[in-house]
Amino acid sequence: MKRHFNLLREFSVPLLSGVVAALIWVNLDAEGYHSFNHAPLFGPLSFHFITNELFMVLFFGMAAVEITQSCVPGGDLYPLRKAVNPLLATMGGVVGPVLVYLGLNAVIGSPALHGGWGIPTATDIALAWLAASLVFGKRHPAIAFLLLLAIADDAIGLAIIAVFYPDPLHPIAPQWLGLTLAGMGIAFLLRQRKAASYWPYLLIGGVLSWVGLFKAHVHPALALAFIVPFLPHPPREHKHLFEEDPRDLSPLASFEHEWKVVVDFGLFMFGLANAGVEFSGIGVATWLVFASLLIGKTGGIFSMGMLGKWLGYPLPSQVGKKELLLVGLIGGLGLTVALFVAGEAFTDLRIQGAAKMGALFSGGCGIIAFIVGRLMQVRRKP
Image 1 (cartoon, rainbow, N blue to C red):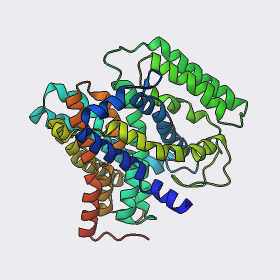
Image 2: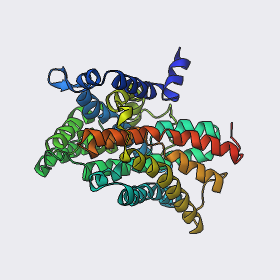
Image 3: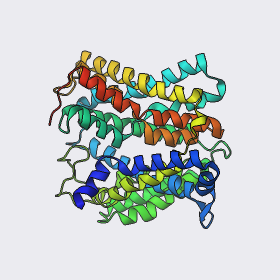
């Protein structure tokens, strides 16, 4: 039973099931789907609000855990020289899609679509890992390189959401961000006093951070991204990304271990709440987002990774031009964060739906990478 349970998580079955359920529901009964999603469910709170404003706090909190662990001694982004090439590739994987999106929009789009440039900037970590495992085998060095890119561009994606996608109907009220700063201050004091549980950090620092962001009209799903880095953790990492260290009983590791299952299965809710797009809604925004993820991610990651190598910051062992090209293709899997940003980028539901369909189409990047990998005879590492 435990093995089957872990396989469901490993192959992102909850998220994909939520996406499929939403697509079927909205195309059979659009009115019923939207009523369920936006009508009050628990008191005044709708299913969409509970998912995007509350549950996604944990999702982005998990991303913050991986970023924090990667940046300490022994982590995959420490020291800086070790991180230069993946960080350069990350910048290519962010700037490339933005340039492709804005360039294509200038040719075939319209000013109304300009704000969607942030949608293709991030990579879906779970789906990227799954696709890379199928393309390279589970222990190939290219996977760790890809996951570093996904973690780093998700961090950039968090910043883009916070800075560039405030609620257009409610201007930013920066005075409320003092509560978020207060939450960070309390988390710092808890760390100084060596609080041995993550709960005070979440219940005091996290709640203050969420209320501050919510009142300031900055997306509150980012609340724990400001708190998690203060959770105590060992001074040195002994495992790579997504590997559990049974010796690590710190509050940071405990938070990840105890809530990772909730997040993995809770992504069914996210898929159900955000992937409800009618097939008739496919439009220009669909192709802008999909092309930006497919072409921009691939070209940006490949070109900047090769530039880093030329500058003297080598790629990992067994990662050459073919592997780097495949990493770029898999990086185009933007499903989760792309859906999230699409919901923030456009208030017009027709355009929003078309953009979300482009995010859903990005799942094809994994299929393309698998086919290209076989054609180029890239050897899998079992």
